[in-house]
Image (cartoon, rainbow, N blue to C red; front, side, top):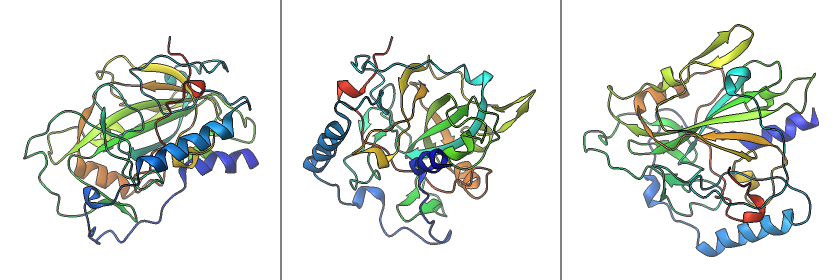
Length: 289
């Protein structure tokens, strides 16, 4: 149970604002912390992990293959041989690379308004404002043009889809192999764009719970050994081992379908999570083969 509670800390849920409340400011209007704050967080992470045997960390630049963390663990099976246990998303991509290389800024120093954005262009019609707040929280809502990174989390434990990473564990196996299939989406106000409700559909196929519509046309996924993420690990190492699969290309998704999904899903997800600082210390990165 202790392991379950610790693992769940990766996704601390913020209390959502009233669904009809309007954000006072768009995210670009919020102040950003200085580079010095981010440097101090990275220095604290290096100090806390030095010499303690922490394994490779996430997120990372998927276009940079070099790392010198020597801790290794067995790669998790393909996700089709595992149980889907959780789906959640972060506002802005936690990873950098592919079509999401535009730095959003340092953010508030606690994981919000930082990360990486879609580096392509969108039309004015795709950026048409929506009439109602989308997935609102105390950290703001989602807007057309925003980037989100979706984590389809899988476990070798005999589990069912549910809230937080605690859904990936059971009383029989508290140290299952974990795999995160990752897809970055950019939100557009276009009913012809992909449906987030379709992209997150899941069902039991045979003995396994499966995500049915993870995109398979967004480039060869970058596979690497890493950890759990989230801003709670900005200044401390994550002790959890995760096999990552990050697709380099972005999919446009109808923002209205994201809003619909946030209003009700088995994962109890109703807002975007913050991002962990990009891990750049080579001592905390695996080498991508």
